[in-house]
Length: 457
Image: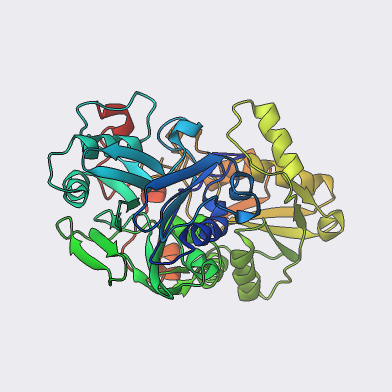
């Protein structure tokens, strides 16, 4: 987590059959920059040529100035990363490239493996990401081809994951059998594209076709339509509900609706469950703006801009020192005094993970002369760690934790009152359906056991 916010779940992009595939992938990665800011990379292959890899630490435009990838190719796969398994360094920046006896393969991965499969007899090291562990298992495979090796290894995988792999003459994509982590397919002129969110397909000029199905293994060859097969037995789908709450960009499509529309409905449900007599509604920028719109509209309250985000701070990393963490929050968000002075304020946020940001903002509003500060959260209490690709590793570091009393939490945050959207209200806003709600409910759709990165040896 960074500044009390969860680190995003990484972003994957891939393109096939387009002469400018590496540059298109870089465009897609910029659209997914919100999902990962530690590193960026692109692996690509020209027709008949070798797979080349370009990657570095930092933002996409720092790694690829001017969005220029130094090479051409008709196939490419890219990644932006926040570390959830494996250390944050260049060795774990993705895509990862392995030279195997079956040929070269580059792999980009969003998510985390759990349990202890696939098992590599010679793992790449104790600090390796589970992406590297998958490649190590592929390299050891006795399958007759890279495709069969990937199928064999990934069929053993458990957890929440979406992967795109590049071989000498094709792309592969796979999504976990519950569909916890997202992956969508798009159509390009002359080719195909894959991405973690539809906003990346839009940025590349691709038309969204559909989501990759949970448990689907897809192969895309040059000039051919994708072919698919089910890699896992059919299970009940459980896509991550926190994608719509926080991770995904407002213009992306989730469950057939824009994220903006879903968040507005969350705000409306929140207003129905926790109305308050107030003078103004403020949103914590940027992911909470849509929910604040829905809350304000439902109660016929004015929505104003009362918080300013500094957009030029660059990357924000996990800071263990509370004083330095609080200082970074002060630099990132500022209160407009005239929006709160003498007024009863409703502050709408999408979630409270650690509580650092909320506590700071509420304190600043009192300093600016607010009469009341009511905190409304457009999601249930975040009480349980995610083991499927989000950096909330230990429950004791979560603000709500096992403390069920909102009034006690409100006092800790210095808020006049605190109201969370119920899980039932969140699911209603999503239009029903089945979801992974483990971070709210503690009900994990895939048994967690021991994290793969600690046990694949």
